[in-house]
Every structure is written in structure tokens, then in C-alpha cells.
Image (cartoon, rainbow, N blue to C red; front, side):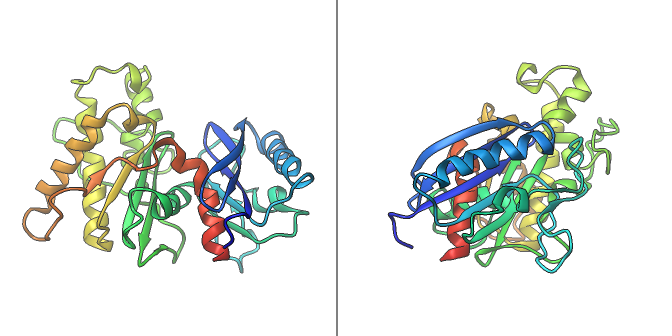
Length: 294
């Protein structure tokens, strides 16, 4: 793809959305941030941002990276829709057509975490790998699982954040997931911590036992991913972990203990922060569009 081409993207997140205009090298030209309220407010505002870039100079492709679950089967009648989300007002919301209608350029859509994983694979901490995972721990627990260079499909995209894991003996809290109670997301996400303690996770002291639960849930999920799909690196980010690097170190250690000597693990770089940091999200839809039009 010619480096002079301009790529547009939209990252749909649980609390905010970002419209992005960038080069094919991942250099961001402009961003517009929009609060995630309800579809009838948020999507037109994002489409207006795209229209503002289209009319003066145009762009060559659009990528959409959205929170989910998403229908990603092009043959399905609800292709490009958000499906069974816990986000109020967004269940069964169409996102692909309202954002891309009228532009007439190639379009790619995937989950926000698969987008971030694609960005890390193109420009970040996974650019030398074809088997890896990007995990974000924030409003939810999302997993972008890349196997042989492509995000997993099948019944749907990866939903490892909703798996059940064994609990610590001292922990019998019922969890916060509206679908699964004490799944990984129901134990380790930002809303789960806030629901459990009554305060935001950023205000919780570093030695609070809730972090033992967070580490254990995420480490068991990581162990399952490694045993099932063999990612060579797991990139852990999101609001819960971004300000607490010690948790990533603890998760790495716990994963190694859980797996033991059964698998040969790399000495370093198994569980690490994302290489792109906060840019992994907004560059995600750009990477999706580039991958789809390569």
C-alpha cells in the first residue's frame, strides 16, 4: 500500500469512541473523541468526523474496531451489529453501515481488541510474531487472539474474558458479569472491582487482597490461552493494569507456575505491556483497514 494514502478509522469503546485519520505508516494525522452514550447520538457524531475528512481530501479505506460482542460473519443478516453486549442501549445496534455508508471505499470491521492486536502486530510489541494475544482489562476483559497471523473465528470472535476459572479459597464473591457472574471479566474488570469495593480501582491500595483475585483470574485465563492456542506473547493493557505494572509481573510469574515445566516458555517477554501503549486502541482500526486491503 502506498505510504501517501490516508486511512480512516473508528474505535468504539465502552466509555469513549475515537475517529482517527492516519497514514499507512500509522502516523496519526487527526483524532476526534466522542463520548459513548447511545447509538443515535454517538454514531452520527463519528460519521460527521469521517465526513469532515472525506470532503476536503478523502481517504482510501475505513477500519472499524468496536466493543462487542460483534457479528462478524459477512453472510449473516446482522453483519456489523453489536449483539449481546452488557452496554446499555447498544444491544443489536448496527455500527458498520451507519459509520461507512456513502464513502465507497474498502471497509474492515473487527473487535476493538482484535484491532489493537493488529496494531501491535504491525507497529508494536508483536511485530515479529504470528501467534500472540492482546488483552485489555478495563470496562471489560477483552482478548484479541491471533493464531497464524489472523484473529480467531468460528462461532464468533474470541471471548476468553467470559471463561470461568477456579477461585481462590478465600474468595467467594459472586462476581459482576450480568451473563456469567464470576467469570474473568466479572472478577477482574474495572466495574467488577468498583462493584465489589464501592470505589474505583485507582483508589484501591496496592496491597489490597482484591488484586490477588485479579492476578489469579487473569493468569488462569492466560494459561488456558497458552495451552489452547500457543501464543508466544500476551500483551496486557487497559485501565486496570496500565498504572499497576507490578500486576503484569505477578501475572507472568503465576502463569509460569501454573504451566510448570510442561511447556517450554520464553525466559522473557511472555506477559508484557503493549508496545504501543495508549495508541494501540486508536491505531487498531487503521491496522484492520490496512490488513484488509493489503
